[in-house]
Amino acid sequence: MSLSRRHLLGLGGMAAAASVLGIGACSRAAPAAAEAAPARRFEIMRSDAQWKQQLTPAQYAVLRQQATERAGSSPLDREKRRGTFHCAGCALPLFSSSTKFESGTGWPSFWAPLHDAVGEQRDTLFGMVRVEIHCRRCGGHLGHVFNDGPRPTGLRYCMNGAALTFEPAARTDASDAGSAWRVPV
Image (cartoon, rainbow, N blue to C red; front, side):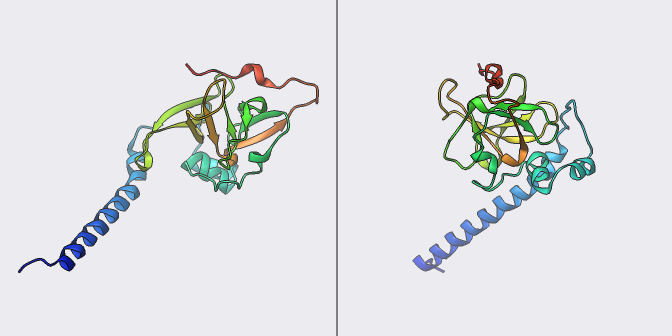
């Protein structure tokens, strides 16, 4: 039997569909592989049931399941007051409002975290190499850091608003924690 152009294109389409289905199968298997990895240890450790009881569904999805909220959905992206952004899971201060900037991405963005506030981990999910940012105290997923931010660090900490809470500065003339941010090396 000879292959016509029509048969060849049909076979190519089936091969493409099979590869897409194969990739989908691999992505569904990723959570099982992640569960097999040894659990990281943090100062604050809770059971899954305790986290579900403490957090809202959106907070739980982001902090504990590494979900990403829809761009533009967080009111914290539009927060302009002076103050401090805290982890929604354990209330650890993470970012000063003095390092927040308008990135145009639809997520709260900062050019530096507070000193000793976050941890970093390589993230290769979805075939990309990124740096995941998590709360150093409870391990809650916050977002990712990219090297396309403003001076002085050149970094953009792109955070999920659902992973954060905001505490306004106590007084209008009080200095916020701007001097406490860390410059990555």
